[in-house]
Length: 376
Image 1 (cartoon, helix red, strand yellow):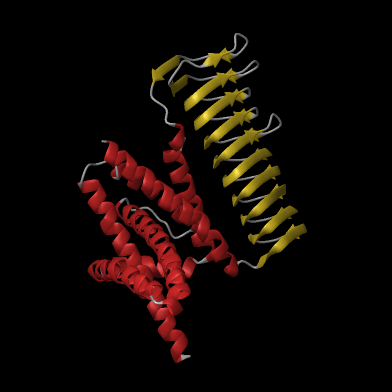
Image 2 (cartoon, one colour):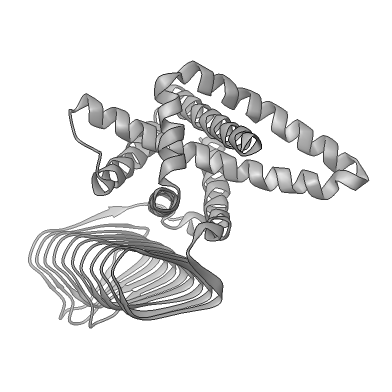
């Protein structure tokens, strides 16, 4: 059991670090990038940016995908907001979903649909309103705003002083329901000790408590893993839709070829990198290959998630030709694969096979792109 838990922690740590690595690499495909990026006025399309500091105070008619050190996003966004950075500050009116990952996240906005966020500290201000569901994971989470549907939080420290018009599910090391908090539905929480519920807090439904051990070293790890994978998969599809779906098509057309190519890449690439590192003149090339190898593993996993999402949609006769439906299908696939991983032996083998297939499809796709560039 301990070994299995450690294995899960290590896997989560590696994938989380690589997911953060992929954003600066993808920034080369972003229309606006630099040390400082500023946008004002009106944008009648989707908007992509990456930089040390990104300040968006504009009317955006489509979605926003932003990555950087310090992010300020706001005014009026008609589509989704997808953001990853050291600090993320979202304000103004957002008509659709918000998905954010970062060290310090502040939400001071009116959000028309769901909010999903993972970070070190998360603050949903008193002036904020979220019309959909809220999923949060972090070290320190404060919700002082209004949530019109359900609220789910996993964090080391949880404080709730706002209004929730649905059910609340909490899991954390320390939980406080502060003065003025209103919960119209049920409150279910898991923690080492009972929550500190202020006498002036109002809870309309049932309150249930489950005592659990809380290891601060993996606060909200499960939810945070899902959030980072969701954010990264959306960024990948937004920036590289053709590459992503071409790789998915390779798995569908010839799964054994993709699986075989992934198995060879898994073995050969690290060996080549180690041999280069052992040669003094090749050390930097070897290190670059290792870095790209981890990025390829992440891309392979995400491609396999898109494949599972498309495969499941076809079996259910669901149309995923639109961007929104495809992103919904991959989000569901990430949740399903997370559950599949919990099945002893079989679950791990299936996940590993999917990872190899995705890695192989990515390598074959890159090989074709290289060959085509050589023929041009």
